[in-house]
Length: 319
Length: 253
Image 1 (cartoon, rainbow over the protein chains, first blue to last red):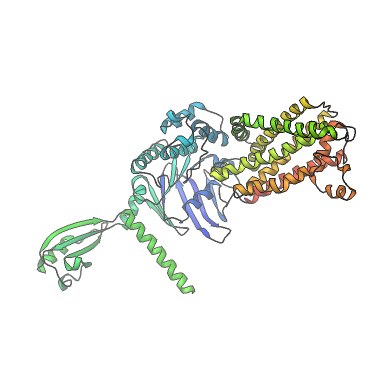
Image 2 (cartoon, rainbow over the protein chains, first blue to last red):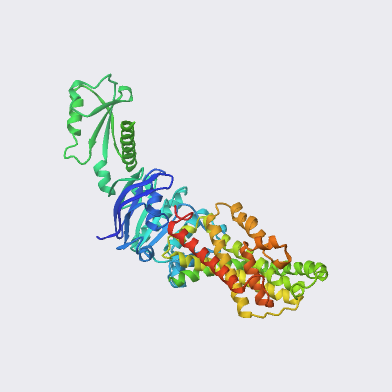
């Protein structure tokens, strides 16, 4: 499918000299959900702000639906809806008014039927005449989404839509995102919750320190980086790994009570049968076995700490 | 031009005005009435005519200017500072609109509000004193240009301000003294010669003088000079705002 959003070597250096984006390139396909995963301060919000025109890029380019976001900003921005991370709403405004305002601001003629549709979809219709300050936190987030959808964007940015939101509301938000995807909207969301990316994204991008470490299909990422571990618990502890088992990739854990075997789920042979045979031949008696699959979280932590380690090495050399 | 967006911003800003309509209406009526009670009746009756105009009537143009200038600045600065303070300015920055459209919406609304207040004061004043307007078209032109230019200035202050104190700082420390010393309540010919020269550096003198000429046909400085001063001030403000949006100063990180 064609890329609806194309980012090329985007850099952002703030006035203070802080480099928030270090040359990010990324293509986003129409209709997909991309989760940008990264710790706080990774550059997620800066990336979104730069695409949407809230922050000016230091260099690089962004093309939205084929339109440059600086030279053809009107066409480019018309395609984008943005849901910010913080709840930024005028407390005295009424729900219906503020959502209509957003539509008008994007130059779309008033369309009460469309506004009603958006409000109904987000379960806000009953609250249309309520003032923002009368709403719960969850409702306010829905209003932010309604405002972003009011001008019928083709791309929706959700900047940490579920940060500080309770579990039930988070599930609600995921459902809303799924419905939006079904209606053909391309969605880019940032999050630092791995389970969120795992639950709703088609592709996952990992960003840290202003760099995009990788972007991959969620399943591929998990399969490629996914390791499985088999823990073999023994009836009697051993002080060291028996020589007969030295060919296997084993670790002694739990003070010698168990052997930990790490293997690749994608390999043709996992080596489990051989291992278990060899364990029996070495005279060890099994008490129990269990397997563990690494989650996106483990992958993520691994990637980020790798990045931090290599950064450290570089600055160490420089010193 | 994205006129729908301009109209949307304008309407939203005016909605705030209508929500507090009674305050917006009563407060200038009350303060003008007080000025007339004090300066018109109590003190004014002891002051001789200025340039052949009864003192009560003489101060009307200055009084209107005083309110219109302070109202324009406070309306426009608050209008743009508020979304900055709340954070919903993100929406304006990410919308497909350029700086002219943003300014037209915000400044247009702020200028409309102060124009409304100017008219209310004029109407209230006419209840107390006999007013004749010798050059009505020039009077309207001066009034509209003043509303516009000081709303532009207010817009700049609103973008510059980092907190509510700064929002009040310029109006309080710069604008109020300039307006009071700008001949709102006296003719500069009443000042000693040295101060007459000094006062010519005060831009408000040109506004009040021109505006007063539109009423009574007498001016402290040539009318054309007044017109040039206010025209130049308007252009300077537009220039500054253009630069602000071009560089993103204080609005785009």
